[in-house]
Length: 194
Image (cartoon, rainbow, N blue to C red; front, side, top):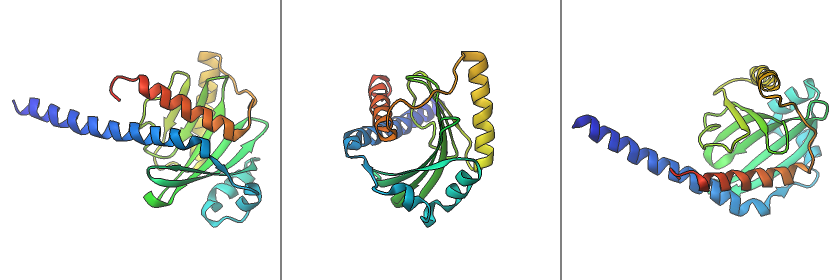
């Protein structure tokens, strides 16, 4: 009987937690039209102290500053500083969520119209189920060099085993972000547990 009670409690907690995650993404989806691309964001990135580590790594690895985006959700403002390597089509994003005192990094490479490889250092990288074709790997606490190694290994694996290769970006970065958030929210609405 105790194990049945434990299972019920765990399912209750998981159900509440997953509902909160789902609501968080839906709130972001509602605000996605208000994505604010900061004017002169690429210039601001060059001196912004909150993104110094990412900027130094990006410069050392051939990434060019793209800019900054503010996105608003239930946790408040989230600032995303972004750099892009045009040759590999890989994007480095540094996330800053002041209200949660959270900071993280992501390397992302488009692999087709609806395929993407994302490598993140935050434990919430796999908090939500992802739509088919979105490959997310999470390495909590990894530094940017470790993330790049894992990202490159995953790209090789997907090329060899799924015939998926990096493709050039077909739309402006902010449009791609809006599309991805909408697609993710639509997918979450289709998942029974949510």
